[in-house]
Image (cartoon, rainbow, N blue to C red; front, side, top):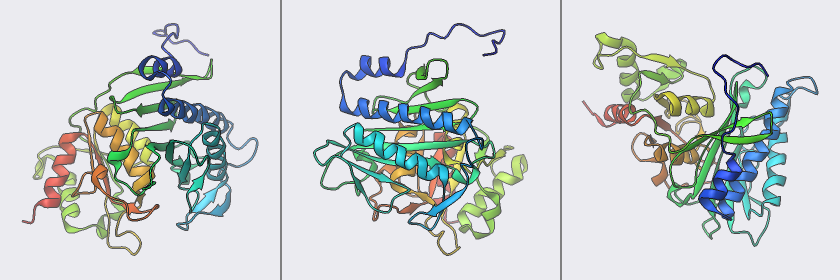
Length: 328
């Protein structure tokens, strides 16, 4: 590996050692470790690109009608076997219509999006994995996000980055390719309180509710508008990619519901996309909402329910909510 002028020897604590130190023989920590280890395998396959085969080739369709690419299916099947071996009771995956029972006597359930941003497979844009861990209960996955006991994401970009929490703050780790393990980067990370970088798909603006349009119009007016500041826009079309950047640099992501058929409740999934994002960002001092209610307070009506999603730095989210609740 190329050594940069400011590089030092890598001796950061491994994820496994950190979890053992903080959580002992916890079943929750063991499942989180299993998922992290599984994403290292995904990172290696992504790095191989099209050499063994095209990971972006369409091989099926999921329950919502989205085209499934080879990487979607391969990552899903990989996670099924990893979580079965980890003793998880049941799994809810974006790539399966029904709940998958793995170990009927297990004590933990997992909701997961194995590959977020799969529309960008093969383009070099960041992809990711999102997951949450819940105690096994009769409610299954139809419970509020306040029932979640751990969550995490992995961002596959220039580096393979892990963010996770077991309810004791937001922690960051990086995959060390030399040893094949995640190593701790930062404990108790806090999201910057405010940023002037926003993530939204401006091509949808004509379909948005009036309040969201007013907000985006004022953003675009910059210093000459109501907000009195110039803003930068980023749009990666990858929730995990946007999330990882916002955790590090601050900012705001919003994907509201709009007037198009099928988009009334946004496009992100509540249980296995919005909830883990909300759990993690709250642990880091940020906020996540559907525009009216904190994401973690919402009760899912169905397993694959869509939800409008706004998350980011607390001051930015508050600013957005002000527009949503302002009837003037």
